[in-house]
Image 1 (cartoon, rainbow, N blue to C red):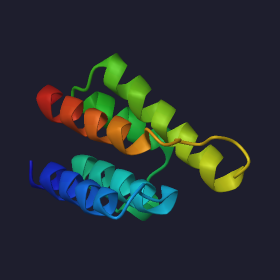
Image 2 (image 1 turned 90 degrees about the horizontal axis):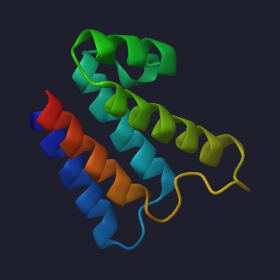
Image 3 (image 1 turned 90 degrees about the vertical axis):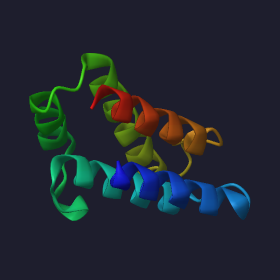
Length: 104
């Protein structure tokens, strides 16, 4: 729960300054997921993350939502002309974190 509180607080703080940047949301996403699987955010890969989250009991819909956001963050970072996470990214990240905490 403390990782979730930190993540939600960081999103709220970033949103208070206007629309949060892709980089700030991505950092929150990685930090939160790293805490969930007890790994350094820098060492996360989508494949290992999915396996570790599944092993801890997360349902398929949560795993798919994590995969989707992961892909959208990658698109936003490596193909900036794509929409990436878009303006609703912070809302979707908050929703994902809350869903994961309910599932935990």
